[in-house]
Image (cartoon, rainbow, N blue to C red; front, top):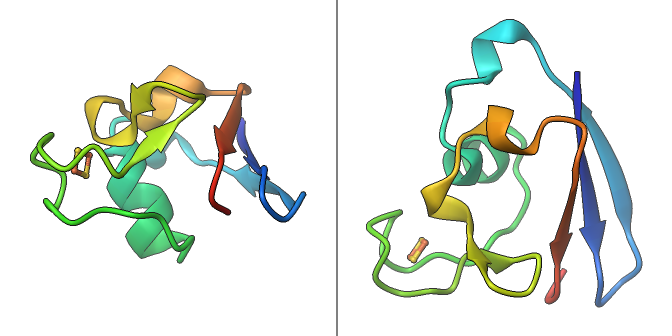
Length: 78
Ligand code: FES
């Protein structure tokens, strides 16, 4: 089980291996705090700031890790 991160600004690709314990975690906080990916967020995941946008129009704080299992997460400013 993996997540794939693509930073569109830098062209950086990252593959993150997952355990079953990760699946129910917030996608935003898992990547930001556990994997130290510098994601934008000024509302701390309260769905207000809209800075956590990815894949053009989705908000990362609306999803869990399992929602993007084996799918690519494209972040424009990375
Ligand atoms: S972190 Fe602010 S809207 Fe997602």
